[in-house]
Image (cartoon, rainbow, N blue to C red; front, side):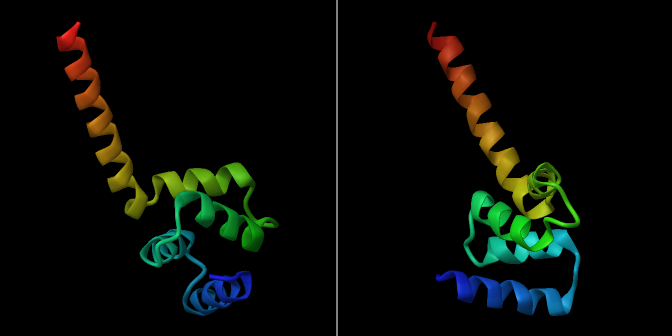
Length: 86
């Protein structure tokens, strides 16, 4: 997707709401990664939120939190497996 299409998508979402969590989840539904979402939202909200604040909002967003928890579970299972192998 080119930058113009991305900006059009974000602008259409901004007409619905200014809720950052909603925007994060909509970008997630549109198959944007956390990094892409961070870049897009930072460009739109750099006068409102710091780069770090946007990153924290993405990580703590309910739509990414599930994936984060799944990744942590997988990581813990791998650690447990490796500890048993030693």
